[in-house]
Figure (cartoon, rainbow, N blue to C red):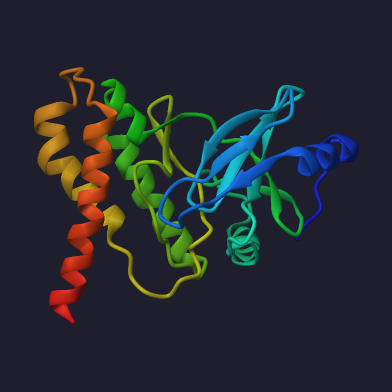
Length: 219
């Protein structure tokens, strides 16, 4: 992986990696951070890893995989293929179970819906352009959903590319895009309604069950 000038002080980084504690009870639910050394902050969690920031390095984050969770080797390869991109983070450093990435600012589409923040069509168009760019570089965008798409100043950005080497089709983004134009844009976008977290979690789990049953009946 290409070496770059931007980096976190090695002593600070290694102390953090020794101290931070992550648990992943289930591969389909976000990891749990049981210990986080100061002054580090939790930026976000996925099903396999947590993302952390340090106040002295505002443009960087460290992504740490939970013990026993796979995917980091694949994610390294994805970042090598992506290189510099307007839509995706850049990887500056990689270790056995961590990545140092460019910090992508913004609010997730999931939280936009949760807090009633309007999502303009430009964000959706940006995601379409990002996915086309990734495919042109030999990747297969996978697991693109409301928590992995960020909005910043009205533009769209993607994070969490760990599954972009999987060859089979993933319909999450296609279904989300369809819901945006059919439901969100005409009925929700400018109303400022805040959707409770329990409702959004119910939709997320219901969608998972729907896709499981659809696969069963289509096989």
